[in-house]
Length: 445
Image 1: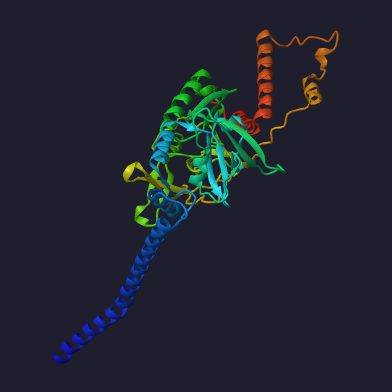
Image 2: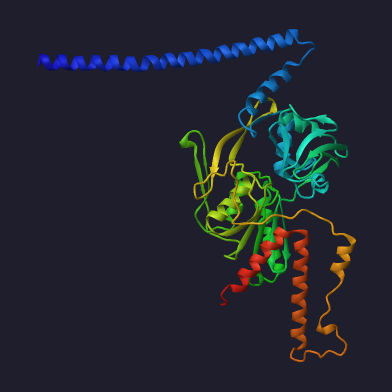
């Protein structure tokens, strides 16, 4: 018995010694880490005081601290930042769909400001700004060396005022200036229309009106076409859509899915992950869908495209999307400011992250550059090729009734209209052609 007790005591002592041997270095390491953090905070305080006391000009302490906070956040990734009270208010206005400005979504790449997308119908869009353009100067002042918040601040100004931005564009030899007049930006989240027997839904942003606009616009356009039986399919145009609210991306995806995962988010702590699933109900009732994307399709747009592609619910057409696969949480701060912090990555239903990779289309279709035809080309296009019907004394076609003749003429007019669309928007025309083909081979009930 004594030996047993002694053995037990010995085991306890050995365990205590082992625990001390393991815990001791860990505690010491944590203490050293804390000490280093406190030393660095002291260093920050020293620098702050020296700037206030010795800088060549008087500086505002609040500006210094705000710049330090923003520098800390922007060092993490391009999408984390500090929002001063006025910037936080601007962001809230944007999610409601109305704000003042140029109408461009920008990011920062290699120290330069890069256009993610110009928003439909805005001054920037009307001035010809394109996704992928680099803005190097604002009113002659270089943006190199400024962080994104500072660069955006330079582009702000009163509604109605003019701004001149210098653009560097791939494929263009020299930088060029573009004059833009600032305006109130009123975003209609979704515009629906009929192109032939196809319903085209142009989604320009994901704000708190997107799903409602889409649902109402879809129903109205389907009714105009005479019901779903008359519809070949649907085009969901997400080109140059910079994203927006996650919950709206989920609702738009859910609008066309009967079941299954839409998107999942994963943070640093695995327990913080979320998974969002579709509910029964498809607004398109199984009709084929084509999703259009390009390099200006980002964030929420990529969630929708990725979800519909993974579920094989839609054919994705266009060019590779932007590749923003991260989730930002906006956290209110004192004094009405806010902090936008990247808190998670999102994943498509198949488990793929599109961060920095983007969504790859099922069918890659480039949009040809806008080239105005010469007068000679215009005249050549307008000259109609001679046919049998143009020959003097040609025989009439007596096998067709008036109604059949009228139907042929209507079909020909529709085909000519589709051909015109290819000149103005080749990618959209391609998407509509896909839906026409699918409709032509669909089994008849």
